[in-house]
Image (tube, rainbow, N blue to C red; front, side, top):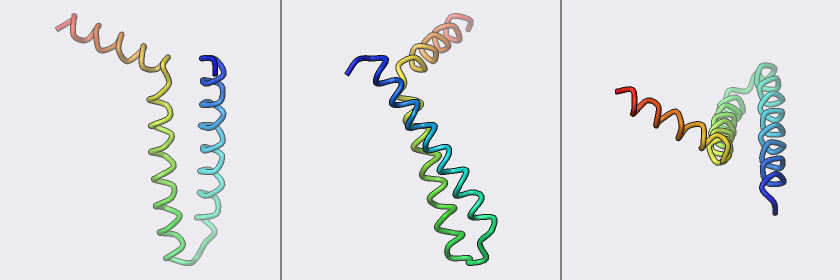
Amino acid sequence: MEYRDFISKQEALIEETKNIINELSKYRKDTKDKKLDKNIQKTLGILKEKIKLLDSMNPDNFKEKKASFRSTFRST
């Protein structure tokens, strides 16, 4: 798999996960069941963590963070 293919699939997965989060959030607002609400809230938390993980695996973001770290280190 080429780099650009990987990145595009990763971005598509992140976008799809965000759509799922939005749908679950809408459903959560409408539910009256406290147990279901708690499970949805837990699921939303897990999905948000997965997005952070996927985003942190993006090599472009890693390069930016590394550059940011270096500039911070040099300025001190």
